[in-house]
Image 1 (cartoon, rainbow, N blue to C red):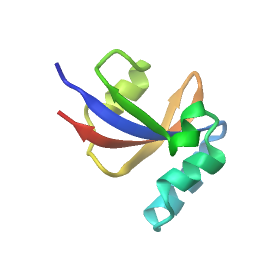
Image 2 (tube, rainbow, N blue to C red):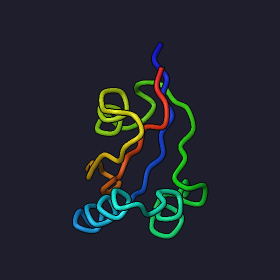
Image 3 (spheres, helix red, strand yellow):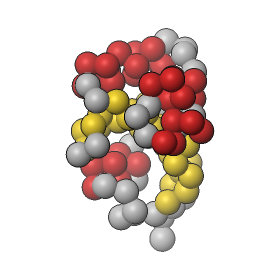
Image 4 (cartoon, helix red, strand yellow):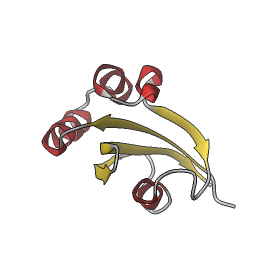
Length: 92
């Protein structure tokens, strides 16, 4: 079964999510931005969600984590929780 590790930043507004993605692409640290801005408790750990398999996260999140490129920020990913920036850190 496939496994992945990812980190994310959860915010309420799509435009702020887009702004944070731009900041990450320009070199700002993902983990520091997660600690400062993420509405998810994982933000305290730089947004780290650990390892998980398909179906353990909401479908919109799973689609990104198990199909998109590893190591770059993806988003905004809209879920019932808000808007996410997702970075897949590993996948096997």
